[in-house]
Image (cartoon, rainbow, N blue to C red; front, side, top):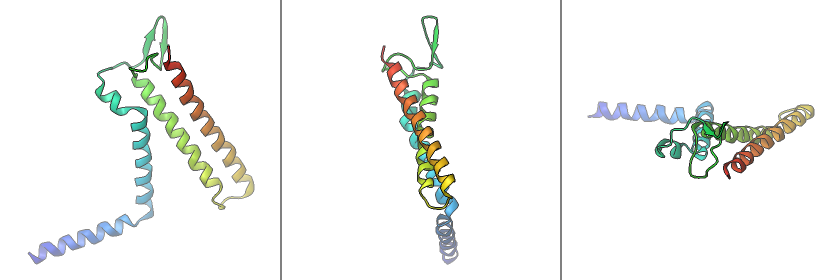
Length: 134
């Protein structure tokens, strides 16, 4: 029995050592952000609603956003998740610009591009919401 407990103790020590690594913590945060964006974009609804529309054909027009609040296309899910991830990338770039690790010129470019990313994400999400109303 002591050999088994010794193995368990070594395994737990390695797990604690691994959890302290910076790269594993960053990977866990990145995975959490991606999972949150996918859930916010509506993966639960897309999986369990029974609606299997790739895109919506309304009249003679192909639409990504189906014009009804009670239905969601797969393309709409992917576009919404992309906009959420763009917004997160903009916020991450914004925080990196103020970390004082970059020169003034680089920080200004980072602020400009972070503002652009956040604006594109916000306008895309707002535009998608507006196009959902008939």
